[in-house]
Amino acid sequence: MRGHSHRAGRTARKRRQKHESSARSVSLCHQPQHVKLWKFLHHRGFSSTLLQPALFTDTGRGLQTLRTIKPGQLIISLPESCLLTTSTVLHSYLGRYIKSWKPRLSPLLALCIFLVCERHRGEASDWFPYINVLPTVYTCPAYFSDDVMALLPASVRRRALEQREAVKEMHSTNQEFFRSLQPVLSQPTAAVLTYEALRWAWCSVNTRTVFMSHASSSFLSGPDNYALAPFLDLLNHRPDVQVKAGFNDVTRCYEIRSVSGTLRYQQAFINYGSHDNQQLLLEYGFVTTANPHSVVYVDTDLLCDVLRGDRSLTQKIKFLRENSFLHNLTVSSDGPSWRLMTALRLLSLPQTLYHQWKAVLLGQLVCEEREQWSVRMAKSLCQRLLQDTCSALDKVSHLLQQCEQPIREQLNVVKSLRQEERCILGSCLKALEESLRHNDSPLGAVN
Image (cartoon, rainbow, N blue to C red; front, top):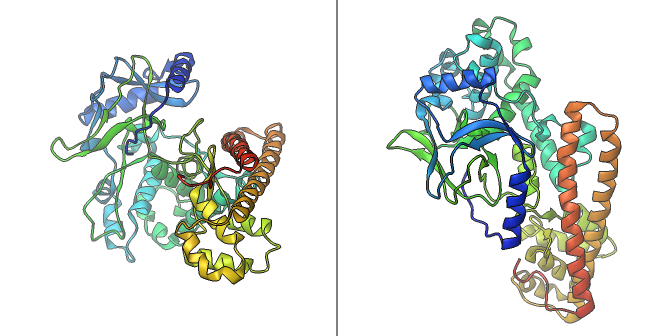
């Protein structure tokens, strides 16, 4: 939850201002669940006259400004008593069970179990007003059906499957501890601590926590940087917004300060970090339009398929892997990245020039003929990626006509990701074609 600056030109600013003025909102502060949340937070020392929860036509739930926020102004100061952390869990009725259990639980698992148990307790839970406003389902890959998962780009699909398996493993490997909690549950543990419940809690923690470093606990295993922050977690992400955020050890509050300010009655945003859309989808379950950080990844399998006629390909791929040059091979709207073009330049060399391979990875130029071959291969990769993207979008359109709401929401996220990547690939292809026509200087020199 760190702010990152992004300079937008005059045209971009006008487009954004027009978009903001056209986005409508409806206040949610009078809805019963938000009234209860407000009372819950007020009782713990929090109040806010700057922001109110609202439903926006473009982003869904968010926080709306009630007054113009000036640059440098503090927009939220959430007391430590309002934060849900592992300290909260260890001081709860679950504490004695967690403290006595070995092997030690991870901070993430402890928070997940607490959320599931508190949701099970319903209105008897102290944290019910917060849990009651959390989403009931998420559009993170852990929720994706197999049909939706298959529509993701290969590079993100692999990580999405790993995410889903990680949640399944967390559930299956902790059954014994779950059973030890039977004394504090009114129903069998198998009916409460289900895979679906743990998945919901995992996504709640993964998508809504703020970074807050805690002293290591002898009762937990691994780093603990989690804090669930009611009300504050309604702030949505925008890549061009800059904020300063963190826990203030003096005031004992988690504070967010605006850098650029926000006009009255507009949505207040924060910046989750310089994430491309694939990362946003994996971590938070959404993508943003016109994301300046977005790129399209070139998977090793695709690279090998396009170059499968090269007899020395196996040795070259091994060399690239040994030199950590097979990850983060990307293309952007401006063209292929320096890493991708460098990898392609190495792949253009014959095995007889093995003594030059390392030098090329360090930036040594290749002859004009091999440079043009590298550009043509980059173009072939983009064409293949674009073909895959268009095919996926066709399948998304077909599935949207016959699916129910939860799947529809998942498909719409994938559709947004694929549409953004289609634009990136189209722009990249134009840049490559222009380069081939004019035999420009080496591509990827500054990416």
